Image 1 (cartoon, rainbow, N blue to C red):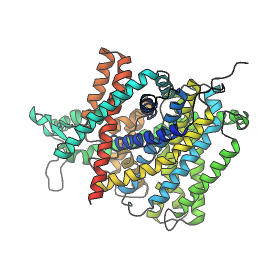
Image 2 (tube, rainbow, N blue to C red; image 1 turned 90 degrees about the horizontal axis):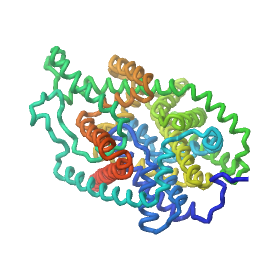
Image 3 (cartoon, helix red, strand yellow; image 1 turned 180 degrees about the horizontal axis):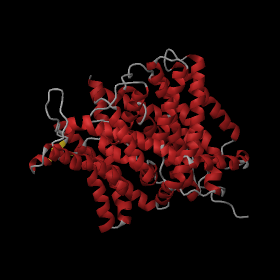
Image 4 (cartoon, rainbow, N blue to C red; image 1 turned 90 degrees about the vertical axis):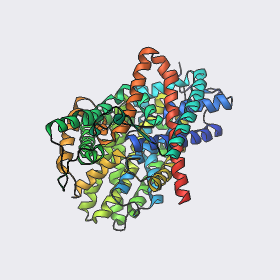
Length: 573
């Protein structure tokens, strides 16, 4: 009988202490870099490819280790660490934006997010065999990482290119920080009207993100250009610019954004996220069938998988930690309400994690923000039904919601990594252990970064807009009866829902273009244009072999300098 790729015994090293340590180091670098970029741009990029490239640079280039499956474990551990970045960067900043930054315990939140990470991993492991071995879901992101791992020589070369680009990006960003020059007003030089906002953000990181996203970022660019280069000129031509209380016309890009485009963009984010959940609803049936079929497969006794009893222990222990976090998140919660919130959170993690894993396996698109929004809304409804005080209800819901978001992120990330492992002949059990080994570190790193950046620059500022967290905070404010521009949110939500119904995620990406300062959108468009030109002129192979490592380096270099500068500001103060 022919053995499957994952069951063939191999003498090559796989889960080693070197892989563990290298994975932790790379994971911290990626979590800081991608998390920092997510606070600026409102979306994160997949970290597994970056981890695989860096892993080759260290394992093969520096340590002369040649095992592909060991590097696969490195990228699994690293992406396990990074799993907290998107989960926490999209949710935790909302606590600060709502004014509760001094009313929650970051230690309790961190332990809760670790518990959420373990729940997400433990819940999804039993479905590996069915989703990957039997249904053969595609998981395009996992296939891309496997392609990198199967070309070790190219991997080392990519790591060198990435390092060179990171040094360049770091030097440029350090210069902008020291000179205080972070924008270039090209529009003023060529005589553009102020309302068209022809200012460019001096950021190689933003160009790098645009290059990696490629055509996937075109909708984001369209959103910004429609706002400032179509709607603003149209308002000018019609004499329809809004006026302030003193009767002065509001036609400058900054005030226009705050009054019109940002609220409309937030509405689009909300509407797009809700529509994403609706579009994912058919996958619920598929996910239930997957669970039913997986239950018939005795994966618990297979040497390929972690023992099922150990997974039960992980689920039980993590659920208890989540319960403790919920009960101690705010003064008025208490044991009973904490248990109820933890049960709801655990149930949502289980269901949403499976749906998201199915969605990303079939389409390479995951409505994570929508699932988080719905989950936190359910928690707020529950706490209000139990008579909790308004502020305590918000704090508790956001803390448990952050743990839920991390859990869902870990579930989808693990399935991508397991698909990669399936293609390169790795042992699923080793990858599962590696994911657990990395998942605990991510929340610790990310919470420190969040506090450092908030102390230095302020979350929600022009430097760190945190658009996804802003949308979440605005939704919560609306639910709780706050003073919000309801009509603009509603109009944006309708538009975002319609666009996402036309194509999954379209409403969210266009909404981000409306929400973010246009200088960021303009610079981002250079990266997208560069990717299109390189694909056409140099070929897609060159873009993947050279262009993407350069872009990844641009992200890492600027992000590390940015976080380092923020840390120095905190230490000096």
